[in-house]
Length: 217
Image (cartoon, rainbow, N blue to C red; front, side):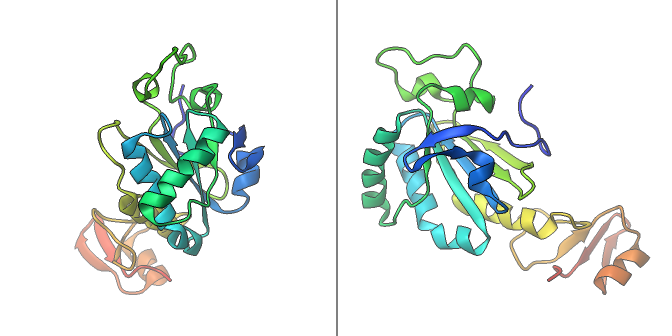
């Protein structure tokens, strides 16, 4: 059985280009984004790591730590970061998990238990290791996105999803399609309209089951 929403994210001991630690230790009481890759020195992944590096200030504003994972050794990650920084123009200050043993990818159910890396392997041999996890400060999985190798991830969407998760976490609200930070939010069905008005103020009743309010501060 793989990870599901609201499962506890595993507290794995990992080796990275910045040393070894446990994932919960690294996360602390912050939000966490882990994004995984099948191989170093691959074109799509290089652009994705660069995109994450360029958003460093945005992650910090949201009290979110980011960590990469790639199916290669830590020393390869160090070399790869030179390419990432040269092409993106941004410092890749986040750690990258070394997973040449596939132990972390298997523990997170991205690869089957019998997966192995053949001699002369390519990224296709670990192609399913392309997942984004967003984890809340209580170490619970809040979102998972899986991409094929041919489609570069949109980290503006990851940032938007993080905003939505942080806006709604532990609150009786949800966000509508295409929501961005600052727009109105949807009242959860657990609140009747009277209770919603008492909690949020003015309620726009579009349908009996679709009611919106200003985004709470």
